[in-house]
Image (cartoon, rainbow, N blue to C red; front, side, top):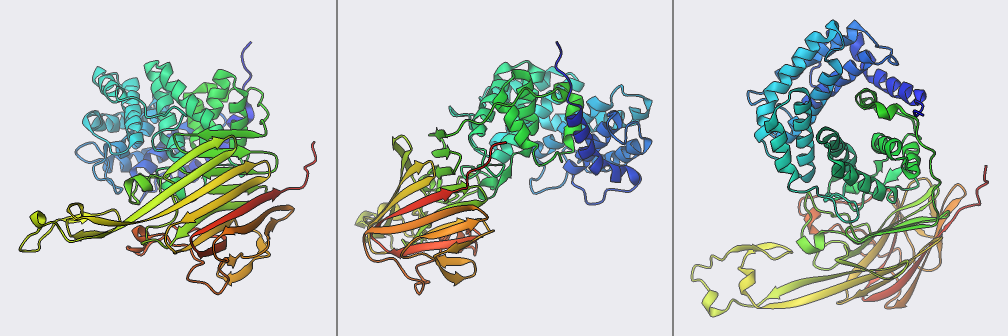
Length: 573
């Protein structure tokens, strides 16, 4: 018995497309000045999908065709003599052009054979695709996900314009192996690039090439992502190696992939994620084109499986643990790349947040720890151990050196020594050739996850240096029991504090086990977040915003911090 269609989903997808396409069709001859090539191709695809869909207000509209034609002229004009597109910060970029060609090819599938009114659009799309083929066939990439976006473009070109050279090039890229680890995370560990690039590209390749293994890679990533969905409807990004590591990422872009694979596999947990992804409404105009290109998306979802609580997940490859209960959702993270690479760099996981706690509307967005040790920046764990269930140990040892005179056989009369980076700064001093006197500083954070929060034991050893623990709460409440410092900052010394939003709250209590008393509100030089010299040398910062509570002092120190969530009992409907 065939699965019934979800007409409301299709109508919602059509409404989302119409919200973007209708204003364009209302002014079909208006030149799209300043629109980048990717935006132009996306608009053409949306207009053609609206023309094709019986659920769109632009179904069969000549004005939609005229607007698509206007945008195609602008898109062809943006194409250089290489067939690649001009614009953007990546110059003569095959992968950036691949994003555009993917939309061009999808639009070509939608337009081809759809009637004489679209013949001109079909021909213009074919011309653009043909001009780009040579450069995409031989072009290179510079990020992991680019490979799959480029392969998807080559596969789509082959789908519409069969050419064995295209498949040979895809095979060459795919023999490198898909960069997905044992836990189902892509090497960039980015929600943004998983949702927008790797997953959709691999699903397309699976379909065109008949490669079930590529579909299975996407299933593994989506299964892992289930445990990274936070109570606020976003996906955890603290582990990411890309731009999204410093901000929230919505679940909505995952909707077509969870929906499609829930329908094709019958997985109720994927169906639940699809429902969550569309809970805020459907606003992705691209979904309409996807329903036309992949009709399975239009089928009704299987029954969503209820969420299992409590739930634990530890991802050793990313060094991230998540514990979810009816009271609290807690994330512990120790997977930064900075300790190994000794630098903050695009493409590395650099976020120093090591804990988050969600208690309904009360949210502790970030827990970070600064140390005043040679300006080497905040605590980022170099190792993460799991000594027992629900317990994790994060550790980082920082080392800086004072250098002795060069040995005689390394000295130069002209004093011109190699410019070398010692991991802290650079100088013309041939550091590797010198004897070193090292100074070390070790920070250990032990976390025990509980149904209602977490217990932290923080040990700061080494020379006497200032340190500050910063707890950043999401705006909406105010710390009660902490001393205000101004500018959205508070100080906690003795006694507990509570952060309350509505009926939800997070209680914090710190106690010193060893070391001096905690710093009071008059110690502004201690109670601050220090991003480290990698940021400050260029006048930058990775500081958080929100309501920030500081606990600090002069180390060495051992202290405990209890984090407790409290939420009123919810009535079951």
